[in-house]
Image (cartoon, rainbow, N blue to C red; front, top):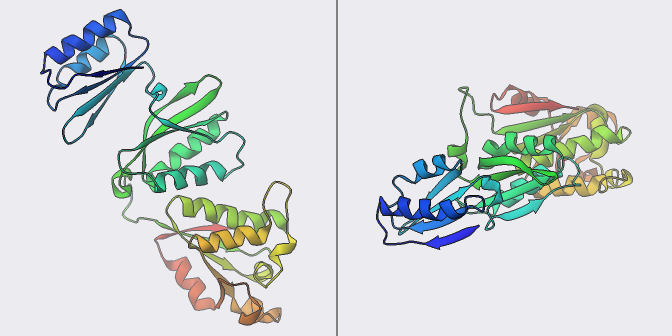
Length: 280
């Protein structure tokens, strides 16, 4: 992609310059840096040559990108999440957005279209804006721009559900459901949600010291490691006091980060309209 410095050239001369360059080669794309106000008329030139256009306004300059496929910009950082197991791609995208500045962009690639679409759906919750989406060789991609989280959301209801409550009534005897508790929690945390986990009935068997360490699926880390990661990322884990009493489990028996809670806590969480509830 060609890069041109053209500060000081005013409109409409900037558009004339750009058209002369594109007449010679309109397939490689073009990034042109102009003085503020000089970008007038560039959109017409882009349309004439069938190019997409992006205009980034900075304090003392305007950077204009024109390309057949805006995902082909060479100055974009790329993340290839091919091979990552769900919700790995969402977590990676969320972590990346978390360390980006507003206006920064990143291109995320995967050989699975469904994975790319899943990330796109989550962008408003993670403070990201979809700039471009397409196919690059054999892989699907999307280009994300970091924006303020409140600016990325399109509120469709009067309730902003920025919290997730994961309810788990199955214990270490059902490894799939036990894993799902913390995998979904990590995905929600990466999307900027506040996460609470409520373990009840057999679900409380996950919380005692050493129990989760006995659960290991070949495709995932040990269950206790996932639980620790969720706690360290900000998840709150409640353990049903009644279910714990049935099994002789006391607060001192629980892993660090888990705490006993009664029916009032559970009902209060369920009654809070800002919580989206997931049951396992």
